[in-house]
Amino acid sequence: MSRTFSALRRGICTATLLSTVAVSSMPAAFAQKNKPAAAATEEKKTVPSYYGAQPATENVDLGIYAQIRNEGLLHSHVMEYMEGLSDGIGPRLTGSPNMKKANEWTRDRMTDAGLVNAHLEDWGEFGMGWKQINSWARMITPDTEPVWIQATPWSPATKGAVTADAVLVELNTQADLAKYKGKLAGKIVLLGAPHPIVDLTEPLFSRYTEAELKEMEGPETPRGRGGVNIQQALADRARLAQLRGAALKMMTEEGVAAIITPSRDGGKGGGTGIIFDDNGANLVRGAQVKETAVTIPNAVTTVENYGRIFRLLQHHVPVQMEVNIQTEFTGDHEHGFNTVAEIPGTDPKLKEQVVMVGGHLDSWISGTGATDNAAGSVVAMEAVRILKALNIKPRRTIRIALWSGEEQGLFGSRGYVKQHFGEITTPPGGPAPGSDAAMMAALGMGGRNARRGPLKTTKEWETLDAYYNLDNGTGKVRGVYTQQNFAIGPIFAQWIAPLKDLGVTTITNRNTGGTDHLSFDSLGLPGFQFIQDDMDYETRSHHSNMDTVERIHEDDLKQAAVVEAIFLYNTSEREAMMPRKPYPHPEEDSDRNAPLKNLYPTAVSGADKQ
Figure 1 (tube, one colour):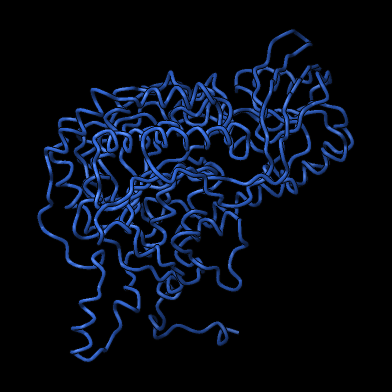
Figure 2: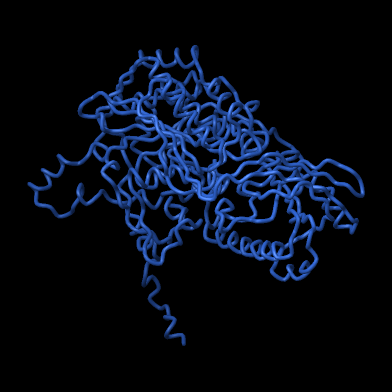
């Protein structure tokens, strides 16, 4: 999951994500106003099933449930997929040689499983290809000590092992830059202060309790006016980026030998002794793009290793270090690819409609990306393998898509959705393409008054039945978020009733964010993320060197694959398409959210005051 939006997962996006879309009207072709009675009657016949009435009772085939459970729990291959991907290939940074291997490996494994049309889809240019070869550091004086580092993604290499004096650079305002000007040439810069170590007063590992799951079924606690201000958060990020950009320019001009930063913390203070090497470690936004890349070798270290040197420099104790960052660039304009494969539909009336499942295949580099998100990828692979192993011939086409570029901003799924289903256009004067603001606006997270253009759809938009996503680690599935698609809750509730013995109990109408289902949901398409047990995902494994197969729970992956296979089967066999939220009209949002006028009859206008 992208750390860019992981804070939104339980915070910002829960309160704002697409809530502005949920009150829109149908497309003009389906819901024109003021029609004569005869025309209105004829028009009713053309309303697609995803906007029409749904059957009160689902046709739940318990015989198929039993077959899927038997295959998925007793004859599973999910851990073979997991170890082949995580151990056999390793970290999968988008644009890297390992990402190419992962795309090709998953394509070939889907072919082995019997899926058809297994192929790679190019979603566009990503940036530089890069890989880490080896990185190490040590303190030489006043004492010798190994310093554990990981190269920050897209860092250039040092010219072999570099020995230099360390200098501490702390930046809070532009005025701080003057203190360091002319003093950094050839130095190893420690940039910023380490986060404070907090006492671990609660377990880093947890599963949902029954009480917590029950609470999720009810209305969400209102955030009130004290909630996160997205626009302010973006403004703060822009200010800090500008300050850091000015510092990098100065350090580049002066010829700094290397930059080392302290790792961020994990949830509940679980980041001690761990390296998180992700967007938060990159010194600039878009570090993968050659035009905006950092040209100084840079790395991240544990807060404990960093802390000792930081304190010595604060007390004016000279510190000499040796750093060796070995990396390799493999191209300046690498493209990103998604792996796609299908089980063809067999019903002449329904086979053109598509049910999708997926997860993101890319990862960061300090671990092998097992929980984020090899887990979601191999569960999807196992789910379709189960259906093929049972020789199930679905009415609708079932398609698996494994995304790349998720960690840098949902690039793979957003590119796929744009190519196949449509996009929310950018109005004149809107945010710059590729910016944080543009991405958040496209996903419905730009705030109540964010300006967005109308939704432009393709013919395929009408054929996507549902997309199911898994990207919250290794925990078992406990239910599903409806993303405020209220009509779909009763359907899911009937589907999971026979799965309660597997721990699947909860349907919540709440939103969840941070991953690829948002690319579908933002266009009014049914896109869903499953509820998963937290485990130690946010506290230890998410984007860290702890993200390895050792953090995987095999039985949970088996259960998740069974659940996904059942959801795919049920969706593929329904007579009606899955219900959708009303057709989005994002171009109307800013006007609909504008303050009401003339509320205070005695108010004085601004012009009158002058």
